[in-house]
View 1: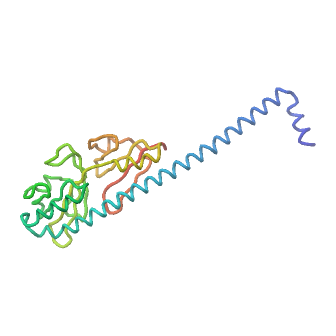
View 2: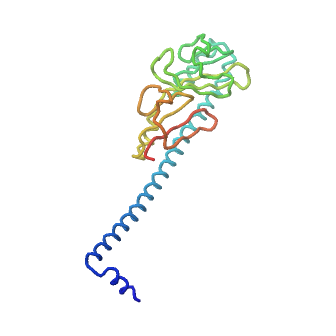
View 3: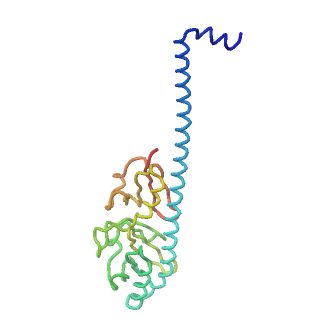
Length: 235
């Protein structure tokens, strides 16, 4: 029996033919729509992966350069503040993202690039920083000279002298990250997370991580540094 005869046998009236045509059209629309949706999802996933990688590379380069600068400052921790404060101030002046460099010995910050001589325990300055670690980070609500202006604090232990190291506070500027997000309109926001605190692209204040939106689209961890990047967008 030919295909035409089979078709005529089961769809012998105009209504049946119209119904069959509509049904086939619906199936075709659903099939094409499904393929289109799959293609868009795949494209969006690739864009998220690229964005996450680009920002992670940016942060990795930034912290490696900061670490290298701190290594150059470490010899100053072997001197009294009066002898090295000028050089410390100069180092800070050539690092636009640095609010201040502090020299630390035996748990006491004793010299600042911003104020010179000082004496403040690291526990009082930032209790979340562990000065026994080679590198540690924290998010602070502000500094004694600039309260209410959030910073990322970074600690670098002097590998040559026990109990000494460099503490630095970094001005927070999320503009570079917002430039990255302009590539992908499905991105709604992002956050930098250290411990239980976060800095976000939608608030000027430090927030607790339990206040962040649930289920970020991407989470990137920076190797060697206790900081994470959360990206939020369309799943």
